[in-house]
Image (tube, rainbow, N blue to C red; front, side):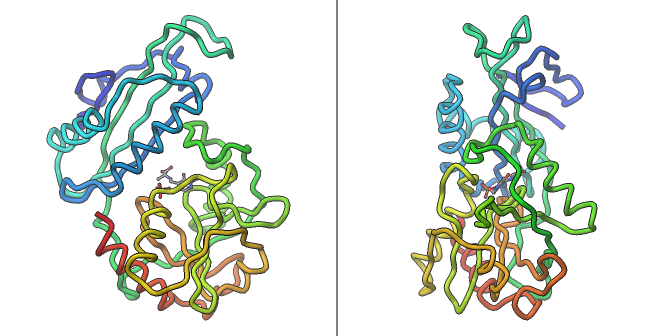
Length: 282
Ligand code: PDD
């Protein structure tokens, strides 16, 4: 496939980055994953805003406007194939001549983007949706999970916990036994038709799907929607649990730690939420 590296489009096997790149040596960078369907991005502005917030949080100055990023996405789609593709954007602090912790001055950020085929967008159909089985764990990541850092070892290790059990995600609780998120998704809890998700803070990524879903539910449904602290007891007593992410949209969890969630089936509130998301996500 054709990828983007520092202003150029080239075949993936010709894209080369120095081993002295701080993205490689320190995981010193910010990334985004943006889904596109038939050339239409989902949540473009929110994704780019989050990346700019992440870059500014870690002191990387990059002069890319919204239209510059849009052009990268449009070109990657045109040079590869429209259809259903995710766009991966990655900005590292850049390549330095030495390995030193301090932010170097005078280095140019490395900007890399590639695209890859994804399945068609999820649809609101109980018979076609993939049911998720998940495990829980103490959240052992750092205290800046609001930054979409390329340092993903904490997330990778948590994901692996579920993978080794033949499950699809690990949902995480802090030491106070409050829900944070999952290793690569946000989490929603439904009880008595009230939809809740953890409030944003440094313990979780401000997911674009989370944000779009909250906006859509508030605008187009009559469900009560809450952003607040959620206890482990509430999670275990939920009628429905959902994961949200750019690729999964709204994904129903049917078992947690081997125990059925609610009736252990894909729920009716999920059906309505995914239907509204499908309709209004653009
Ligand atoms: N994962 N929380 C974490 C830790 C994530 O890595 C992600 C996204 C989300 C959901 O965010 P969004 O709705 O903006 O996709 C929540 C990406 C897709 C990944 O690493 O592949």
